Image 1 (cartoon, rainbow, N blue to C red):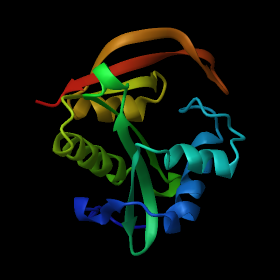
Image 2: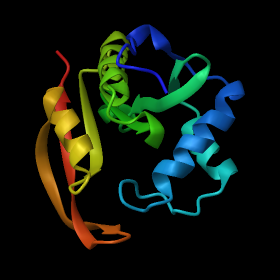
Image 3: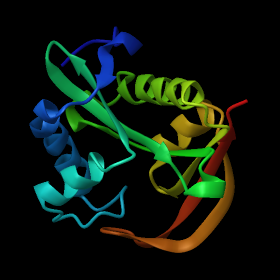
Image 4: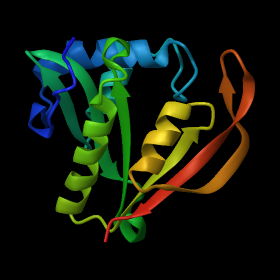
Length: 169
């Protein structure tokens, strides 16, 4: 695993050659059933179809050829809502706590601005995912809504989910 020196330059557009690394992270993040709405038994082909869907920009953060994290960026809604970005980030469990999520979050916000988005919205941040909530708040997001009991946590049962938002102007 890399040290604290992860830089934005370690983030690049993903290619189909990155599928194994992305799948390994996706599976490790989704399987516990505590942070994402995906079925913990999501099949590889379904996960990769979602991560590489049309209209989605897919990125990886790598160090020494190893993929440590991945994120997707796309419009949150079509047509009259297309100026609002949406994203999803996943960090390899072995790479947590050393700034990978923060670097991807910073890169994601810069990319959204570069692409002309006016704001960014996360539709469903699980309230018990304290690391994600803390990261997004530190990067300027605010909780603008709470969805009571909207997420069925694998261990805790029904917990709230947040809608988080930030203007990018």
